[in-house]
Image (cartoon, rainbow, N blue to C red; front, side, top):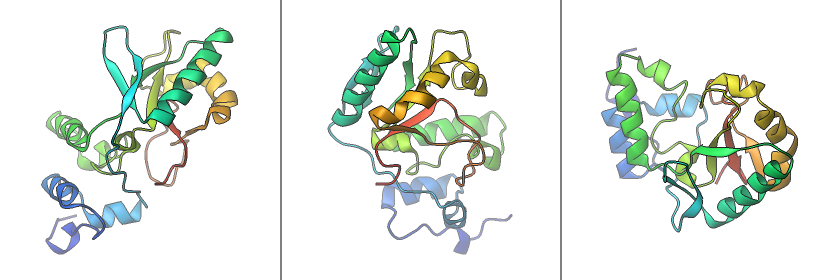
Length: 188
């Protein structure tokens, strides 16, 4: 579909920074509306929820971080290792990820099946985590569904306020992401 000025208009509730980034990526307001995507402003007051083996700090809101630590400790008590592969992500970082995928030759439609448009990623909220495990499943791949970690999360994450955001056939149009879990309400 050819992008015209009329179908590149962004929703009025969308801040100028996000409208500008979306326009630079040719992501239309029609696409946002058709997929019923929710705007997620960048969280403030983030804290370190976990530190990766490589020393990377994973940031979440204080409430999400506390529940993540509680949940990961409970999983470990049950003999299951869950670790954060990704947590808070800025709008600018989300745009970088999309630009990199486009530079690799992926179509915008293909990119938007696996990555949220800038401003619409739950990672901006400081409540979302991409989970990995030490069970040998590749990070951020559907095979995560076959791990004990995924089975444990499916059974227990709700007790800690985390929900699987993008099950198969989700209305937002994202590919199934068994690794992506969000704390608290899925809409702000």
